[in-house]
Image (cartoon, rainbow, N blue to C red; front, side, top):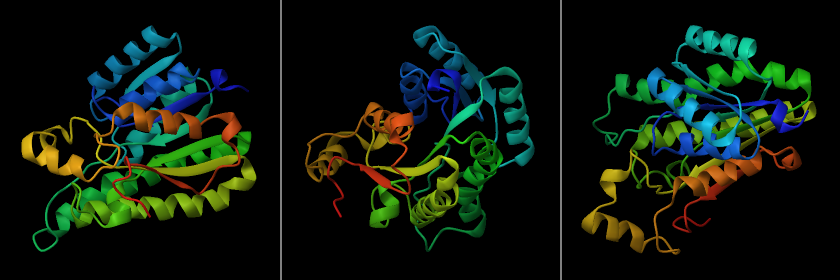
Length: 253
């Protein structure tokens, strides 16, 4: 089957200026049918309508809490009944927290891990068996430069730890699923202009941040979406277990 006969799931893709929504659009532009999953059901449905109208693909928008297995199961049942087989999963849903480690409490720590790590587990664990059975799958995790350099960009220790957990998750999963035609990769964005980081990109703070980026600008959602779409291609079958940096050179290692 070509990608036109498959569905790509993008979690956390309702936000108008987010990486998830840009990725859903870019995947649709490449021929994928798309399922947008988000806590914001109205936003998810609006995104799906926009994607279907812009790209002429089948698009579903569903309310889904990735931290809740029942919610994930219900969303996947709807996709299975109303869409093409799942061929790609983009684990984009995530939350950040700037709370310093000496101030973070257990509840905050668990909340960050619940969405970024357990949420990615819940949906990946649900879709991976079908991908393996069909002999094709593309799974992409949205990690962060914070996981690689140890924070210092936007999120605190909890966020960096959770995003680093995603990297280990993806690498180990790539080893297990590779024999079944399923690739698993991670993308680690740096400073991207989204609703979450918008407040940082002003005045002196913006100038200071940009001074540390060799290409001289903050990232755009399209910079990340294009790479994710590349990793989801059928032709990208020999790329797995990799982490791709999209940070303008702000962190080179």
